[in-house]
Length: 264
Image (spheres, rainbow, N blue to C red):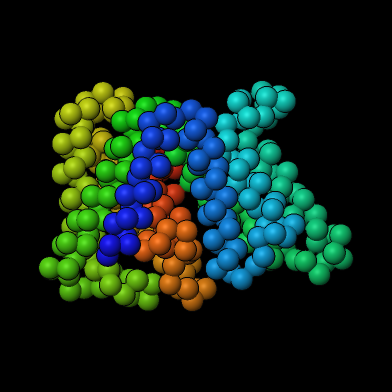
């Protein structure tokens, strides 16, 4: 427990100033986190990150995260991050030709998905921060309140398993408690910050239900990945907490959904 508290305190001491400063600082931090996320996926699968596909997968994630107008000014206006990412996909797929099909499209699929999973998630964290600090805080509050509510309600009232094959400790009652907790926190936040978005408070509360559900599903997805690879944590970079994907699994789903629904 002490180790978890110390790790959380150190991580917050590093991450909060970066979030506050924003701009280049958050872009580089998000790119680094995406790279670590890709590394953790490769590690879980037992693949070497210092390989052609590992390096290209990290590059693909970084290409997705860094804003093209600042970091890749050589691109024309019709191009963008996705085309740079697709360049890495073409090279990975091209290796099936160079290797005379000993490296197959099935094998190429993993580094591509790893790039997308980590890259798009952290890309949208950067986009959310560009809309202001309040947007980031809102997203984190929704995820944190969902986690806390799900844990507390599930521990006291949980009886029916939510998805025992993937995460045996999660319950339906806990999931509903997480949604209720997120709604309460969102309501208070939106009263304090009424101009957070162009959407009215009723729409934002409806969106909050979606974000809470999506965040819990993101957590389950990462649990499914770990169960598939038979590992306890995605990594060891955060002592007592696991890896970057363990801490950001919900965020990697919530931020893109917020963007998709036009919250930012």
